[in-house]
Image (cartoon, rainbow, N blue to C red; front, side, top):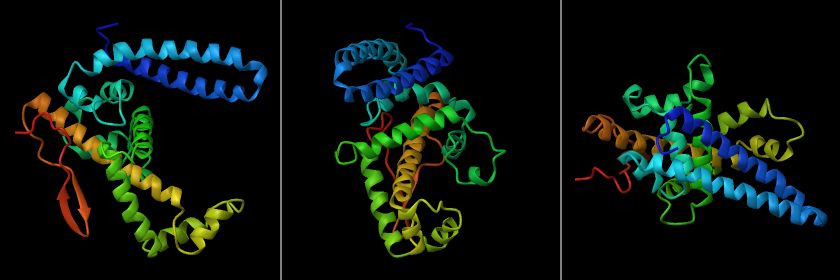
Length: 248
């Protein structure tokens, strides 16, 4: 399993995530004290399988510069890194925007369902975004800090009713049973979970743009034309790649 191809890695990563889902279901049984020993045995077995799965994925990930860079970003690891690498062919993504589209992170995709994107890659990226949010209180989580920064900005804008038009549009389609969201939208504010999702999306897109830049330079031995930018108070600022392996 040391010479895995991309297709094999995709299958292994998908299996790993199914094991995690199984563990979540099994842990639910812990509520029944009569099943504790059986549940713990099952969880231990699945933990062992996870450890076995991680080994070849670690070898696969660290065999390239971009994989080594990616696996060392706080909030990622061998499984998520391998998941991204196995789905991304840098020769087919000349810009970060092309990678965003392929991963399903372009707003235009919502209005243009004919534009293809990779659903498995998008799911992996969402898992990465959840990790960024989970570890955002740790300063060494670079992309988690970006998430916090963007969430703060969006929360302030939301409180200042800068998303009111969008909120009123959503109000027409919200379920009558969702009283908290109705209350928020009626005041011209987006629900906080939507603000959080937008901030995660922002952090994911910056991560993908950095991934693209490192992978592109590794493959072509040149810097891509379009760096990643963030807008702060209306000013465009480049977000430097953390621990850039090609930094002069």
